[in-house]
Length: 295
Ligand SMILES: [Fe+2]
Image (tube, rainbow, N blue to C red):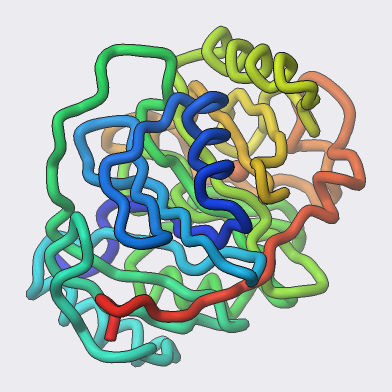
């Protein structure tokens, strides 16, 4: 089966690797599964990694990891993505820590996606206060259309919701969205998101942030599109993080119907005020460069 079947991970560039790992461990409960040089692989479950942190002088996100079923699906999806306008970044390669085979693609606006298969299993961290899994990435684009066509025609994502000309949400499995697009003045990352069990778990993240002297940026509240509970804050490098719970499930796993919401921002907060400027302006630039296992 070609096409993306699961949102895999995000790779971020960080100024101080040890400080970034400490933040992810203390606030979110992530566990480091492997370190290669100044690159750390973190997880919250039995998968080898759901977050990659790369120490670097450059600020930004390196790539978004998207899983396909197997090597044959990787080849098929690469062909479909090329027809949808994707630019390959280097060859298909083996040997990256924790995964079997992968290839990097440049999508519309220069967003960088890693298609991969064969995620390794590790001993899951002990039961504790941590996310269940990496949930979604939200990218900004100057025009939504080209990235929407790339996600749908090239990578096999299906439509979930649209909010005027401002945003759209796309799914590749039961989750209402694994990728979100937001209109913005630059092609950059808006935020990355974790799935937590419930609102209390989100509250405990906020408590741990508060203990560090840091406030939430927006929320907690409930989005209209996707129906999920949310809270946003900045990580140690100023990249916006979302903690989610109660995300809608798409058919055949759930009964959520794809929707078209009015423009503006009223729909994305069902309980309270529209997003503050700090949410709208948050963005992390695209900053990809290949470590040795991608060459
Ligand atoms: Fe989000």
